[in-house]
Amino acid sequence: MNPRPPLPPFTAETAVQKVRAAENAWNNQNPEAVSLAYTPDTHWRNRDTFVHGREEVVAFLTQKWARELDYRLIKELWAFTDDRIAVRFVYECHDADGQWYRSHGNENWEFDENGLMRVRRASINDQLISESDRLFRWDAPGPRPDDHPGLTDLGL
Image (cartoon, rainbow, N blue to C red):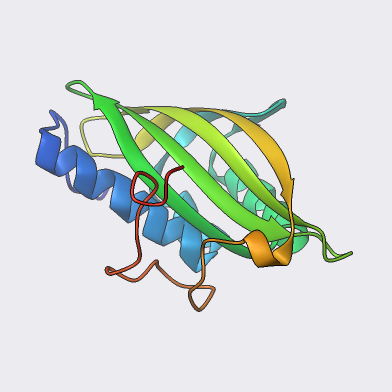
């Protein structure tokens, strides 16, 4: 098993690094690459969907990004302990009909000693927005530029 730094126990600095690494990976929208950040037997709850193992992570993310178009995500550290991190996040995307959404959520993460996420629990609420109300504007897929404001700076 290849370690995925930063490794637990987390500090404030390494927890922020872990959150940004996850944000960048999801913004690249490569399900196979994203799945490697999770243990082979990872357990997720995403809204009302339960995912078990990397193969299901790949299938879930493939379906997600096929329907959530022009996806852009920002995550922010909320709290952390030795091997756990809580984040809040917001993402913007649109559906095939062109309806834009801003989705607000919270995640609880638990990591193994190699820095792989073994548990992910996500609660998410969707808000309809117009294209003109979008706040996340950078080239996608790809990571958020370092100079793009985060959630707190955007008032989210």
